[in-house]
Length: 469
Image (cartoon, rainbow, N blue to C red; front, side):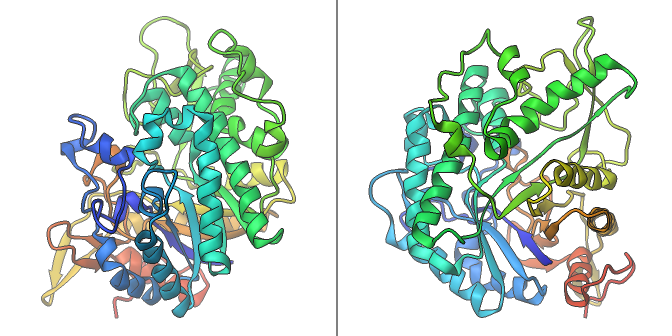
């Protein structure tokens, strides 16, 4: 079992105009007035581009088995096509070597949302050529980094890329177009399949490959209501089955195709594509934070959409426009997300029962809370008991799934560091290590000390077992 923590390139690196890096869609989006809270950008973020050696030291001190990070495509191939950037490749090569030197397995995500802007200018994920360009990029990364990478993850949360980036528009590139969103879903699935094929062509059939999905745990408001159960099915199809289907079963859900027929004939799915999207996975990455509760919308009054995502005029729930997302009972995190560890157990068990031979890994789980820094004997401390409780309870929920037979191979706490939280800027803090964005000083929170006790003892500590020494 692997204990780790995770980050993403645009959220921590900074150095956006250094080292030959090109422009990404998140550079453009965050610099567009009104798109992010307080106008925050990832220009500096955690300055990991310059401070990565210090951060590797924290990773080692935490006793992590593995570290999940993403490569910024525009740092290694600034335009998303054409020439690769030796300086950008060198940055990640040095990081990989440093991780291996301290005994930490690198888990590399090839795409965590920072698409090169030049590709977006040509249509982004609505353009089939972007999937083909991604395969070229993936092949080069496999050639450069070879067996230094323990697990290759193609995409992180393609649901967010497609449905929040092209559907609701609350993420880069900020487009609200249901047809664009559906097209992006398919091209992301295709990109995954093409990339896996290229990675294994370079590294062999045994290369460990994965994809990370933010699968939604959708509860019907009234489990005895056929209408609410149907609402759940509709939400599941656009949230989960639009990826699980083509990636693991070679088909899109028939209900989704039927309900979106007035929007598109899905002709962007070419003959043979669903053979390409369905590639054998070594492990499926699962990101989990909260649950959703739905019911059939009567059509009267304003439709509720308390789905945990930022409000917008656009709708990410394509084909489920008659589904209401209801407010959840607390407790909640600073994101307004409900805290329900049992949802993680349920999700892992559902996946195990549906795909009994596919190993699983929780690649993100964590919580944002409003942290406070205190001085104890002149030493800065961050007491974050709610985050410790959150981690404890969700790891316990994962253990329950394992006890019931789910083949779960690892857990990655989100996040290693406080960072740029996308459209919420720097207002939401997920890190187990606090970052002072003015000085860039790193301070271990109680949750980091607690997590180190977990990783070093290999047993689940009580929430009071926090040793800052």
